Every structure is written in C-alpha cells, then in structure tokens.
Image (cartoon, rainbow, N blue to C red; front, side, top):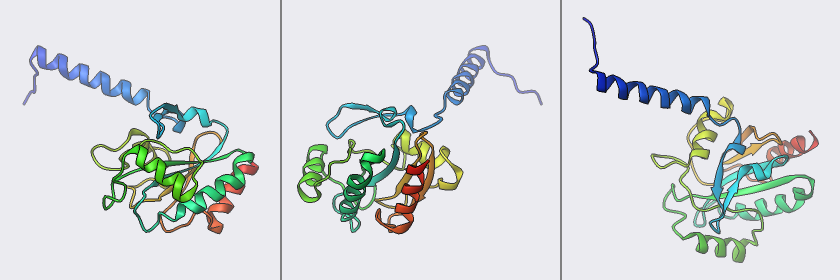
Length: 189
C-alpha cells in the first residue's frame, strides 16, 4: 500500500521536519547556552559564570531541606574566591513548598539564611512547563546524572567548562564529604 501526502500536507510535514532537524543542530552543548532571569528579573546568561565550578540547586522555602541554605551559603563563602559559585533556582514543583513571589523568596533567603549567592526567578524543574535548562540537565547534559528531579534541593555540579559532572540528591547535604570532595577536586583542575 502506497502512502501519499497531499502537496499542502507534504509541505507542512517537510517544514516541521526541517525545524526539528534545525533544533537538533542547535542543541545545547553546555549550561552556558542558557539565559535565565535573576530573582530580580534581569536576564542572566549562564555564560557569565564561565570558568567557575558551579553547584546548581533547585530550592524551596517551606521544605524539610530548606535549612540546607545555611550550608549552601557557607560553601559559597568558603570557595567563591577560588572560582566557585552556588546558583539557586526556586521551584514550586513539590508539595507547593515554594509558593511565594520572587520578591518574597528573595526576602526570605536573605533575612532567614543570609543568602548572598546568585538566585534566579522561580522556575519549574519538571513537568510540561519544565524550564529548558532543567530539561537539558535532566535529559541531555550527562547520562550519568540524567533523570527526573525527585525533590527540592537536588544538586548538579558543573565543571569550569560548563559540563555537568555529578548529581547529588536532596538528602545529600551541601557540606557533606562527598560534595565538598567533588568541589575541591574540580577547583584544583
């Protein structure tokens, strides 16, 4: 049986195929290919962190893991002069534990935890409205760290070239020996 498309349908099919292929050709090669709004709404290219070791964390203000902000700030302060940065991405995907506005989140983080590391506008880290950078982190960046985000405070460690090298789940604290050891190893490279 022969399958034929009408000329107009064939044109739309070819256009769709071309756009899909073009999207594949321009797929992200590192986190530096993304720009996200800061918590203040300013476009922030991830490329502005080139050359740094980065710990990317989806955060929430009303979670059992929220006290990890203390350790995140401590490791940021300890290593920032050596080329390390923590990036916080508020997300309301789990148990409605980040219900506030960006302004409320910023106030909470600075007042309760003295957060000084860069924070970004609230995003979605999974589902239909998943932020494109988190889609990259969980599907394309590195097969060894791929997979859905399971909860708040999942951590991705990124090397100085912008490649995701390790993932730490929520229960692994930012100041745990395994996280600190991985950070220090990358800082020496």
